[in-house]
Image (cartoon, rainbow, N blue to C red; front, side):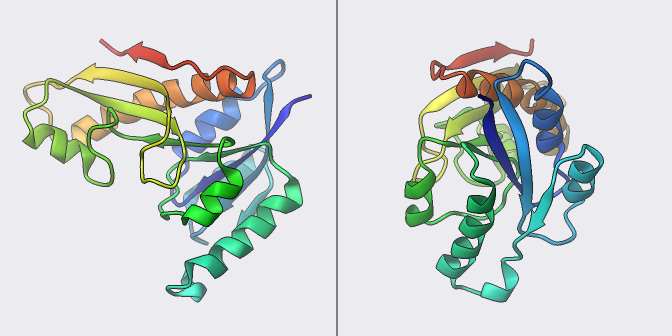
Length: 199
């Protein structure tokens, strides 16, 4: 039985597309829904072109009431009964109550080598710190931001002429490699971390 997989996005959806394209015949997971909290997210068109149903749960009408937004999001997800949730550029911090309901079934990709640089502006922070390497991490989502068990990391060397923009672009290539590998393993019941080296 394939593991039903829903993907949450907020933007262009390049990681979402990488995940969907990886879920071909013989894959232990299948995409059943892409949900965006932003009506104009480019990833919605990408998902539709790939034949995956989409939904919008706009966070803006809910203002500061995160619980009400998440209640609607949960209802939309529950309609398709996913086994796995993949956050792929979903730019909303989820409350502990929502995370608890889906914990153990929810993955996220983060553009740093966690536990370094939780939160935003990871590429600029790595450069400012003078790091020699950088990368991305797929982890299980827990109530603590960017702090769940690590399921995979891809590392690359920081080049002398790297900017935050060039580093972000290079890391994104690794995200597209790493996330599909981790999802396949996770859907197959494997939790041991995968380590990829881009160099």
